[in-house]
Length: 271
Ligand SMILES: NC(=O)c1ccc[n+]([C@@H]2O[C@H](COP(=O)([O-])OP(=O)(O)OC[C@H]3O[C@@H](n4cnc5c(N)ncnc54)[C@H](OP(=O)(O)O)[C@@H]3O)[C@@H](O)[C@H]2O)c1
Image (cartoon, rainbow, N blue to C red; front, side):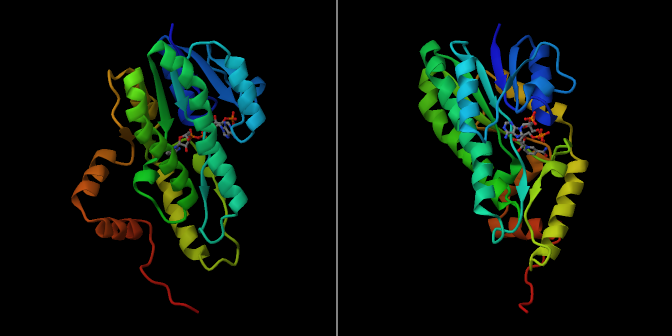
């Protein structure tokens, strides 16, 4: 039986991935910051504690895996963050990178030696279409997702000769309730408050109307089972049309479309 680790398996996309892999016959090790308090645990999932913002927790999780051969690692756990770049506290950005990037890379490093020795393994990072189509007031989050994609697209070349396949799944807007859990940094007297509020309201609206986590899980399953993965799998937010537009249109035109779609002015008067 193949074994998969799914980080953040208690909610949204991670929960749907864990459920899909169990149905497919995988042994699933699912993580949570509090594995003893999982509401509605998925039968068959082996829940373990993991807080990716805590290096000691990452070490304990990796030690707990021990010699268990891992066939698939899905770096899914993550947090959403928004705010004007001028006001994002550096501590909050650092924490977000620890959770969305460094923690995932540390887990990747932990499973790679055994995958290399066995000559097989698959690593799937859950990125975001915001890495391919960045948006105002999402700079820190878009940067974490671009970083995790960068690690994967570069490492593909070095891991392929050892039978290891690493790729990124970029979801668009997915209705998981993530927007309610998004950390927000914009002061009540911020000069950006009006634009920030407009952009985030439109974004929240898109997420509420987004596709289901189960649809993303189907794409992840494709990435798990494809003979050879694509460098990127995108799903949701009309991904095929949007990526086609990116190939056909000049970047400045795309930026204008994006700004208009999210209600951003091209210029604000300076007081
Ligand atoms: N929803 C979207 O529209 C969307 C779009 C693009 C990309 N994504 C990405 O998809 C992934 C899943 O998103 P989602 O919408 O399913 O989010 P979600 O419903 O909020 O689930 C997040 C998961 O991450 C875990 N988690 C949170 N903080 C953690 C920490 N410090 N250490 C370890 N685990 C932690 C949570 O588990 P516990 O609370 O049990 O610890 C939970 O299972 C994320 O990487 C997100 O950035 C989401």
